[in-house]
Amino acid sequence: MTKPATARTSRKNTTAPKSGDQQAYYSADMLASSRDNNIGILIKLVQGSLNRMIDQRVSPLGLTAMQWRPLVIIHHLGVNTPAELSRHSHVDTGAMTRTLDRLEAKSFITRQRSPDDRRVVIIELTESGLQVARQILPIIAASLNDHLHGFSKTEIQNLISGLQRMLVNGNIPVDTQALPEQS
Image (tube, rainbow, N blue to C red):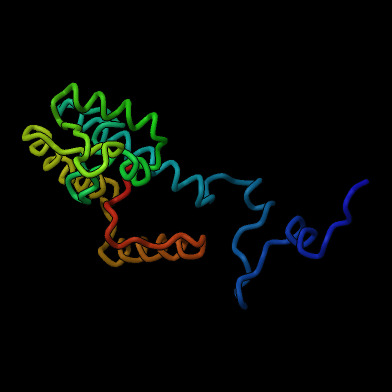
């Protein structure tokens, strides 16, 4: 037996939701007719383009796509455990462990058991890891600037504001302490 559609589910399936007095911008027909104006797809494409550019620029430092992010997070956010690093990187702990194994093999990090709790592993940058980590944010900045070429300062501020508002609308807190997204 099928469940009768409620007012909410039938509205959801037939019309775009309203926000206050504002009519929703997107409709299913609009999205079906053109992918060129789909903000979700455009954001994903820009993210991919940024990631490829950053990854190409950090490769001379001996880093892969997965390896430069933990170094930045450790250095600039002071994260020092694999579990915290996994949360900040949005990757599972198994993938993070493999990444940390590789970074340790390259002598960029060391891992020690916490003297207070043997279950906790503390990550520290080595001197060479610190030198490499210091070079990554300028590479990210240059990559962002390349993607923003031709934008006015006002356009950039409006873009940032709009993306922050989208995060708030999606119930994701805007973390002003976060690093520029590299994922």
